[in-house]
Amino acid sequence: MRLLGTITYCFPYLSEETRKMITTLANEAPSYYAFGTMLGERACDNLVSPELAYVAIRHARNTSQYNLVDGLASVYSDNSFMKPWSFPTRTSKETRLNAKAILSSIETAIDSSPPDWIRMELLLYLLALPHDKESDLEKAIEAAERFLISRKIQNEAIYRAYLHQAKAVRFLRQDPNAALGEWNLAIQCSKKADNMPHTIDLLSRLGNRMKETDADIAIKLLNEACIIADELDIMPLETFNILGLVAATSGQYDMALEAFLKAVGEQQKRGNPIYELAVNVANVCNNLGNHEEALEWARKAEGNIHAQVQLARALIALNRLDEALVELDSARERTLSVGWGGTLPFVDFGFGLYEFATGEYRNALETLHQAKKGWEDYNVNLHLGSCLVALARVELAIAENEGLERHVNTAGFWLEALAQYARERKYLGLLVEYLKLKAETRVLQGRLDDALDLLQQASTLSNRPSMRTQQKHIQECISELEHAQQ
Image: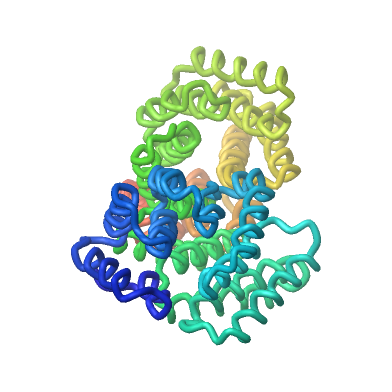
């Protein structure tokens, strides 16, 4: 593997012997992940210098090898510089739980007079911790920036990236445009420094921020992060999970499935349970129409309430309605017994689909609308698109029963709501669903030419790997319609 800036940025401060050892391992390693493994294992199995042990724990964290992190922290428990990096911060929840202990260990490490480059890293670590007041974050940024300038620390870009990231967080609420500018500066600095693990993290975070305003840009950022991760062989679970969620929310289900399956593989590699990821895979399988696979994945979630609803969705689609009702009744009872109000909209969604399948269209419309309002109240957007699609389908079924007038050009209320929702957020997959449903409306009106035109538009939009299954289904619909016109 090539010597990334992630590896060489600290070389000006290391002894010649340490530099030689790191360079030798990097040249032998087939990937950055392998380098992190080899360096961490070398430091665990053989006592090395404090500076090399510190470098080892940093790269073990970069490659998400927390067993190595724990081993290094144990072997070098007297190295105060390493202690702050021994705490898990894989999620915001873990960071909040360990924040006080991390802060205390950073203060202890700084008091022990570390080399300037390590002190700089510790000051930047402070920026990533939760701050009760915005003024506290501002002071921490100023202190880190002042130290960086006063000590003339080499490879400044690698440190500047973290400062811009902290400024982006500070501006997030008061000035979103300024925050976006700081995110982009952070990415530029990180790429300039060739610090690819941090670049992956920055792209992932910005992609996650952008998902509500421009899903297309969010997906491009997350895809770039995944490509870099693949090259380094570090496969960050969080990045793939975020990509899966953004793609699923926007209706690009093939991309979502691929991302979630990679996240599952990474989670299994870490030896962790896959319950929540299994629910995500089941959801995407249901949206793709792969209901037998959805059943299998929902069962892997082992009793999760959301998994029960995904199980019920699959059973409904397979016309196993009695079994579906058992799952839905159980999910509702469990939700009410523990008071998980945020889960109730999802249970309502399942019941709405059940009522639709049993021909109770008016009830289905009301129940699905209730689910939609619940998700909006809890600011949960993952399933809103699917709910709008379901509402539009129920609305179409009601119109079909009551008779559609041939001359009416407007779509139904919920179909238009789906279109507006998709266009505002640039959710291409949901826009394709809208065009398909509108085409169905025109078919029922006997306006086959109009329906064919709408399907051709949907085909153009879905002609991408992220929507392979939708593209296939649209082509089948076009073939059927062309045959009907002959």
